[in-house]
Image (cartoon, rainbow, N blue to C red; front, side, top):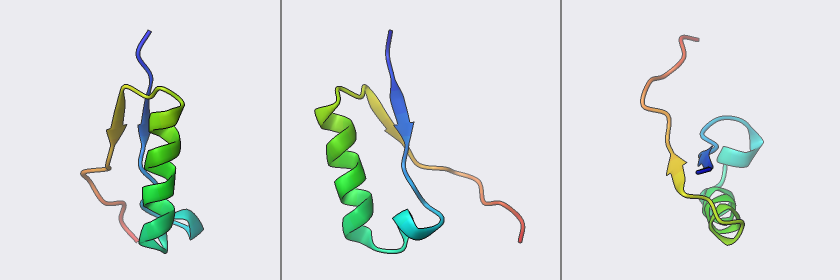
Length: 44
């Protein structure tokens, strides 16, 4: 089974770039096969 994660792009986790980078490093350490950014934005 392959497991991927969506990168945080909204909320507190996405407010600071170093948090997104930390999330990506943790996902890699856990063996994630992929990281996915959202390509569509939600209407406000």
